[in-house]
Image 1 (cartoon, rainbow, N blue to C red):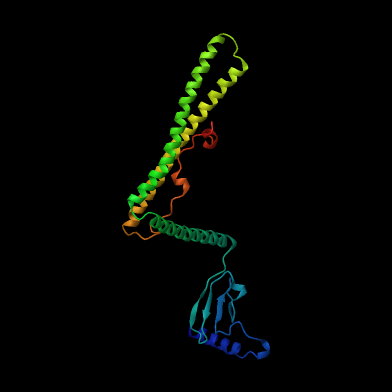
Image 2 (tube, rainbow, N blue to C red):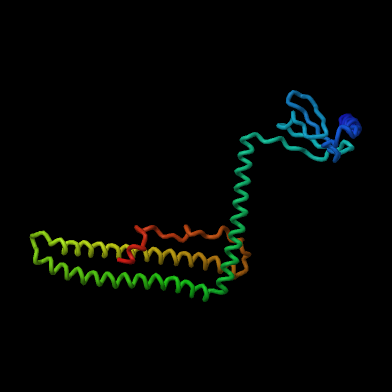
Length: 239
């Protein structure tokens, strides 16, 4: 070890004697790199050693003492794995920041539970009103259907006139559309309640003093979703 240190000091003296014409040495900060190649050769340089890219290199100070270690360059596979890990870490950091932002917004929007309860009631009220409109429409359609059925009695055993058949088919389609819309409103009611349930559980912890962002990832729209019941509700509502 003492011999190696003396040898490094000698190298430093040689490197330090470079003439100005040779330019500024990459080792001007006093770092000296040494390594042992795969075939047993010991190399020393004032810059990272290309022959030892895949091997650990020792970094020395001017006096020959060890300053640190230079890790081997990663293989393509190791680099790919490291990139994946870094992306995962970046995603975790982004999720934490998003959760903190989400929690601060919740606290700003809802000072206490009564405010949150009122918001839930308002959201559900729209769904209830839409459902009631569809239920009234179903009753109207039932009355229309009775009138059509009474008229169809005159054609028992015969084909219905085209106009009457068209009216019956339209009534059937409208009934199905309203039933579908009501099912979708029920799914929306479940989704809204789930959203407010999850929010309330989180808010209770935040109101109790939990730090924003400390409660795990912020819920996403997928966390609130009810099972789909069919086609979009927009068309059904207009029938």
